[in-house]
Image (cartoon, rainbow, N blue to C red; front, top):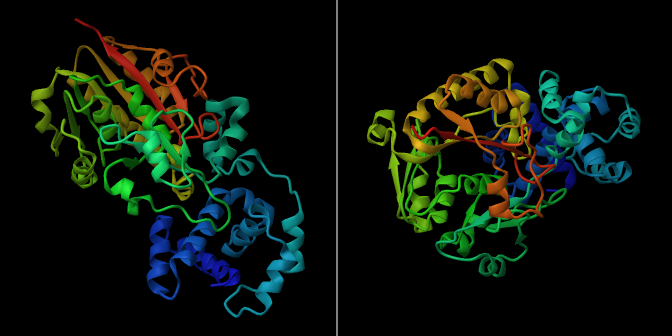
Length: 427
């Protein structure tokens, strides 16, 4: 497919999403199934246009005076990707699969610098902007802008089977991560660059690496799991942090991986086998399966359900689908999960609360509520563990209180994550 055909396909996908809202990945899959003539390179290119259109949706709409699919695609190509309008028109005039050529009125809009409210410049829904300002204050716009950039592909070296120099040599085009000593990164591409499919590589098949954002790696390391300890991963999902902690523990001790959703746990079994992990016991719901662990765990990790605001680089469509009602529901769910998880912490043990969110309502506010209601827990500072694990010379996360940490694309060049660690009184 030529550029015009790819642009027209992106317009069709965006129009389909307007008519039938659903995750972008599903809409792209549906388009590919209906257009089997399109090769993998074409499908990747179309996806790049669609995802970049969502990443900067409100500023592109402000630029064009419309958020219709054609306007968003034109702004993506011209404003976002710096394509020359004359070049586009030359290419599209003799391509029957291309959109109509760019009109003089559209060209004028694409060249203009119209005034916009801060939330449109930030590419955030208006109702979310006050929360973002509350979290990042004068850095709110620069932090928001970082969420509009494409993410890298990050891998965690599995220390049970390999080492970073060995993996870097095996994976051409990769480079060391910025903070985690086990992180490897493929930098984000531009325009039509394709994301490397690492899962087809021998290093992945052998269990040398796992696909995991460096922020997630950092969070798992800050749990500070020790060999011989008893750990509960209370919201384990597919097991990314479980695997990282198991390697930290050198396969000694015991990790209990649990999730209330059996389907979310399904991938963990193959991942554990490939990684060579031997100290993980998986518990399917209901929560009663954990009864024998009450009051016995050295560390309990609560990777709580959340808005996913920290993943906006990878899933930019979800910020436009998020509603205040959905956020309120997540906040209530987080409070319930924390209250359930605290029962498994032994006296003198640690409760680690994590979200992939950068919104204070899901983060600092939750911890404040929990500590007010649970006087036997005390908030600890993560600064000492950070320097011990990563050194003092690496990029630093945000911290609203000097104890908790918030990772962001701007501050740590990772996805957004929040973490707080609380110690239970020894009794």
